[in-house]
Amino acid sequence: MKVDKQKIAAAFQAAATVLLGIDGYVDEVWELVENRDEDNKVALYTHMGKFAQRIIGAAGGGMSVELLRKRRSFGGFTANTGNAVAKLGLDTTMLCMYGKDQLDPVFEPFNEMCRIISIGAPAVTQIFEFDDGKIMLPYIEPIIDFGWKFLVDALGVEKVASLLASAGVIAFGYWSSMPAFDEVIAEICACLPQGSKTRIFTDFADLRKRNEPSLIKTLALLKELNKKVPMTFSMNEHEAAQVFALYGNALSAKEPPEAACIEEVRKEMGLDEIVVHTPYYAAAASSTETATIVPQRFTEKPVRTTGAGDTFNGAYVGSIASKLSMADRLWFANAVVSYFLNNGDAPSLTQVLEANND
Image (cartoon, rainbow, N blue to C red; front, side, top):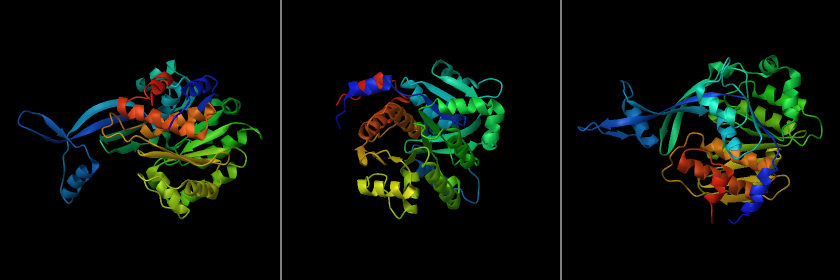
């Protein structure tokens, strides 16, 4: 797909402000040792299925697997998505839980990239990375009680309203880890004036963490809120398969659906825009643009997978703030996540444009 890179660069220079929230995670990332040989060299579990077979084989007994620390880093929706947005040079505010009295050291680099407003302590996620995916075990007690009152008590209602009103895009997640998601997103929309040009972008994350009635209830709420504030709803291949099934449609991670199918689901959901991103393609449909599908170059051996979906989201949020067309939004987000998978971090605007010369 050919794009006008000068046009994209110019659009980002004139982008609206982005507000992200409201979570905070420290990721403890590990590799799992399959065995050590006589020379003390290790072989790692590189595929989740092989590790799963090891667990199944140990059923009824015990199992010990050695861990190798890979990194300790920031995580969660706000940090991973916001990192991508801020690296692209946009005016970015993170309303977050990065530390109660002081920031956890993993979040300190954000002070140089964007505005940080931390209202609580972060949660911790133990992550086991493989070449074909990851196992994430979050301990979310520090953020489980977050709700609208928590936010207002921390900042005051006037400051909260001011932050919301000044944002061109509000990116908000994750539904799966936030019991008060419905309450908070409804209050956010209530704070925005009628006719506001602000857009809300949301990602629910792993839908299997909540039951289907909860999902259906929240989707119905978003449909109603969309009448006042336009919503962009983003899903990876697993989340999209579950959502599409609710409306009688199947979805493949490798083979993109027909454009008409994406548009049909969007209309059923009653949202202004939906986005699907997989390792093989990205697709979107909106109320104002024709449904579009853009292929992705599959990354065989990624340097890093944790945070890839959020990095796609950050690039897409930045593209919304920059008012790019849907085709350009999808191309750009694909290009950013491809860079991330191959380099282990989100790129600057210059880096992503220079890395895609075709």
